[in-house]
Amino acid sequence: SSPAMLPLSLLRAGKDNPMLVELKNGETYNGILVNCDVWMNLSLRDVVCTSRDADKFWKIPECYIRGNNIKYLRVPDEVIDKVQDEPVRKDNRDRFGG
View: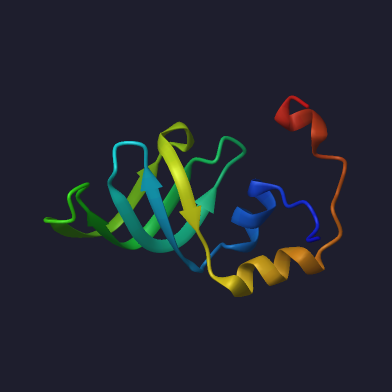
């Protein structure tokens, strides 16, 4: 079985990599991850936004996505491999309310 992976460590490793973000409203954002914080708020650049019915597309230079609007994220396999190679740090627990 694969080791447990924290979403935040996955996002940190995904910095400067392409990712797909689907929001709860059905819109998708494809872009390069610029930054993320402990609430999983994301900044993306070079973004293509697709409407929920996939009938409209927008190219936007950058966008900010609030973490509580995210339904799911898709990151490249290389990013996942990079996270699996890192030891899991236990000192972050307090910051996540756990």
